[in-house]
Image (cartoon, rainbow, N blue to C red):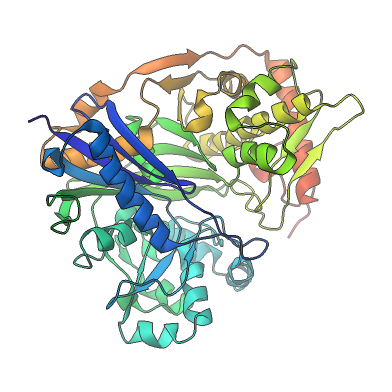
Length: 510
């Protein structure tokens, strides 16, 4: 019987399941949207039980669409929204609170207190991260402090913490496994990326019991099998990887110096730095790209909080488009943004600014501005933010990219991809298979069970669908990016710098 790899892709807006064949082609896809919960401004949650039910539901649906049984699944790979935080009861598997989503800003004040206490260098040196509410650590502390009885129960060993990968594995194995992988662990603010272990000093600073945490495994190995009766057969669970690291693997950015950008709800640029962790001087993140049984790769990452979500806002907030795909046609009605810049800081600004207080702004409006100009400025904001991250990345790693590989929903937008190539000044390459997050999870799982034999074999499977070459003059590019820097400066209310990674920092001495 033909065998497949099933990738479970648990994202911020939906749960998806995709079956891949030996050529890395998606053969069946099933998807179910998740319901976001916004208890108050700046708070973003999910129902953890809905995450599980949606994910197991689409897994069964994908098998049905392909007309196969679970016996034809060689392995399951899991990729997930990373910093989203869940704590549940070990005895019952019931969450003690909703999942707190990575976008949530309720712990911003705690992060600022840690920063003010002088812990920035400690955290960056050990974890490669900045101190920010984005990551899981402060969310865990909030749950232990705010949910009645949670801290005492955690100290008694009655509770379990996990990012979404851990939650899904717990459910898939009916509580037999409490594990995560190094990529997800590296996003918690609790994991030492050099010693490859939970860090006692950081746990003490956040007052988090070690017993709460999962066992950290590699990104590609057989952890166990699904519970009997769940899918109709017991299937090996053979990979775990945070969504952006999985996408980097799926894009075959397997050598140092290769980079990809994913345009999803947020925008995530990762540069493979090989076995060398590079601590950023420009507020980028040093993270684990993947850990294989005999290979550890690090990456530099720039995380943009709002990318595709700005298109959703045009649809749901402003109502100027009826569906997300219509944004390209609307933006294409004008040849440029007409001096309009859109900084979509709905939940603050991520890399390289890390300003949690910033909020969205639209600048340069005139009586001649139309919905088309606003739509084009919204699309261009993704490209500008990516260019700022890449500028910082080039400085940190001292490299010049030959190309940028792209994926995610907005990567299908030709207007945006051409503008991205123009403002970067390097070719932008879109792969034939754009489901690279799920594909990366599938590749990692397939390697673990021998479905694919080597990383070299996987690299040969990658194929480009289209390359967007830069067409804009240097003068025009510099002028547009200068206007963007002014818009950023107005958003954060601080001095302008000619260096994108320093925009938003005061030019006055500390």
